[in-house]
Amino acid sequence: MVTATADIREPFRWTGMGYAVPALLLLAFFFVLPVLALLLRSITEPELGLQNYAELFATSTYARVLFNTFLVAGVVTLFSLLLGFPVAWLLAIMPQRWARIVFAVILLSMWTNLLARTYAWMVLLQRTGVINKMLMATGLVSEPLPLVNNLTGVTIGMVYIMLPFIILPLHATLRAIDPAILNAAALCGAGRWQIFRRVLVPLSAPGAAAGALMVFVMSLGYFVTPSLLGGTANMMLAGMIAQLIQSLLNWGLGGAAAFILLTVTLAIYALQLRYFSGAAGTAGGR
Amino acid sequence: MFKKLSIALAFTMATSFAAYADDLVFTSWGGTTQDAQKEAWADPYTKASGINVLQDGPTDYGKLKAMVDSGNVSWDVVDVEYDFAIAAAKAGLLEPIDFAIVDKKEIDPRFVTDHAVGSFYYSFVLGYNKDVLKEEPKSWADLFDTAKFAGKRTFYKWSAPGVLEIALLADGVAPDKLYPLDLDRAFAKLDTIKKDIIWWGGGAESQQFLASGEAPLGMFWNGRIFAIQQTGGNVAASWNQNLTAADVLVVPKGARNKEAAMKFLATATSADGQAVLATRSGYAPININAKTRMDAAVVASLPDAHSEGQINLDMGYWAQHRDEIAKRWYDWQAK
Image (cartoon, rainbow over all chains, first blue to last red; front, side):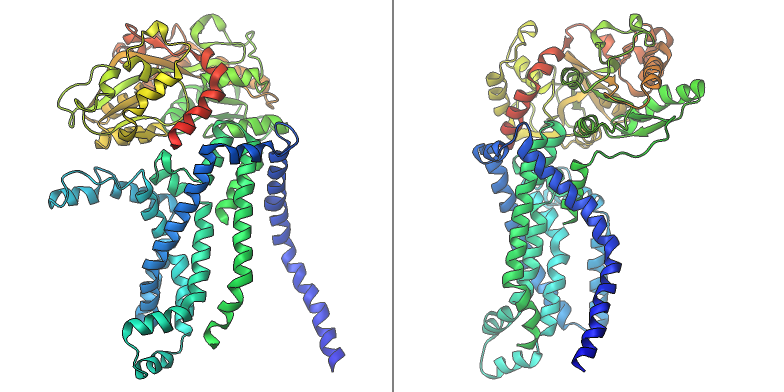
């Protein structure tokens, strides 16, 4: 019997591989090769060596852009988590029928064109925009609030875009929690805050971590929203790469910056695989 | 991840949309200007020669360099900024112009080099929104006077001829003493209003800032002020010390249809081609005979009608110092 199962499995596995070849080839030719070519340019232009990397780390502007990139990604992740958790919880406890409608709204916003959504924020947030006009009319502020062309604008625009990516995994873990556990905690005398802090948060941590990591990594490489809603002082790595290559024609330096971004992203992904993906799988069983 | 994928793709591969061997590919900056270029140049050219002209864009210097470097050049004629053309010619990225086909005599000598012919020329002017401002700003110095003119002011975002010159003029530098640019002084002047600046990255954005009152004053391409006025916006321009610059047409080194490209340049720089373009866009013709074929009212709205006190931005200086200024510019902006 043992040999029989092996016989069935072995060829089956390879048949499966065959179907994946087109997609793998596509990735190899249009992702892996170009990335390698760019990496090569970063260590060969203008001459062979690591001078591009040395320049990136030695120049204060690039260091500041790198810091900005992590700052924005961190702030966006934090706010996405704070705003996403209640929504995910609501989705987990509300009747299926209603949950489906809320889901549709979330997904619909995800499927709408990114540029259209970002420009919409621009119209809403600018000094002469809807929000400021309303605040001025009600007398809450006498001067228009600076909501765009700064960190505030970038954070608002990006949190809005990232919310679904944190709500979906969080919702999955929250739904997997057995309500009996929460009842048990209440019966044992735990208050609402204690239940939240000592039962709900630890149990939902794997989903929160998976979502937060995804948002953080996606935010690191974001280009459109920071360039449209941020000021020149909020430049992020992707914006800088575009500038280096398109305006300064410095492919070597641009390649180095792109490679740093890729390395950081992969490192964070590896971290996730190492510490969180296993835990996410067992969350429901605990 | 998708973001990263597309960035890596866009930057690493010279996009080469395979055009048929006989088609000519013209690349410009999109929007109303490229529409006008199509109508003024491409359509008559196709009618006369039978060669189809494909429109591509926007112009991207990174792509242009990648195409020439890889020997896979899919653009035949490209509209670029003048200072880039001079620097690119020096770097060996451009084909020399064939003046047996293009008539050099008719082109304003300010806007022709061995590797580039004028596309159109324009002025940077001080534009303002009359609904918001009670008083009319009259000089570049007013653009830096936040006490007299409250609100945000908008400037061109990219490192290019214009902003630094305006800062120096506002600081009292005489027009004939502008070059070589005193960068320290220019940036120090800009520092005084840095927090009040919002940057426009493209013409449409500049129009939006001005027309909405988001920035009630700033520096603009004259054609954009013209365009807002055409649609009924209550804006005006001060032409005092207007600064001229030009777009030029170039043929990338190794372009597939070199001869057809030269013939296209001949059409584009002809008196007729330039007259139609100027009428449609509000930018000035680079052909010295074009104005005789244009409506007098349109001619009066062009930079040529404001030559008193007009200053020509020094493209030779910029081509030479382009990279060092750009580096300092973006460092300063990111601070």
